[in-house]
Image (cartoon, rainbow, N blue to C red; front, top):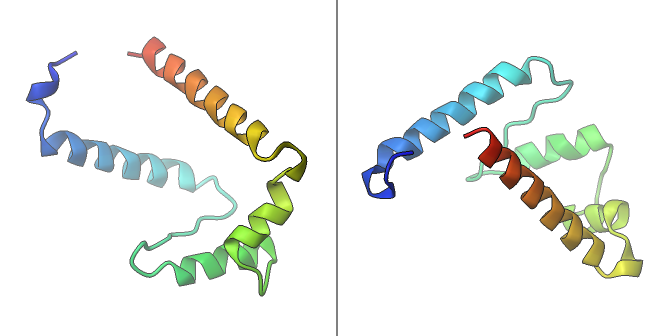
Amino acid sequence: MRPLEVNDIRVCRDYVNNVYEQIDYFSKDWAYFVELDLDNPKPGLDKIFSILEVSGVGVNEYLSAKFLNKNVSGLKHKIDYLRYNIKHTIMDFMHT
């Protein structure tokens, strides 16, 4: 592994290029693919909601109603998030 001081903007550009290559490669097998422009997200969000068959509902309201378990006050989601991050960090270390 190279020293951290050696890294510069080229590392960031290489990472971004790699991500786009992976998206291009795997997206051909996906049933849905939505490009979300951060400068103008409304068209992408509209397309996502049309795929989900949701109309007249905001993102937070939809996700809250669909996925959040109000009985655990978000604790389960925090634990799942932590478990996911630990699992993938370990996997990253195993592959380097």
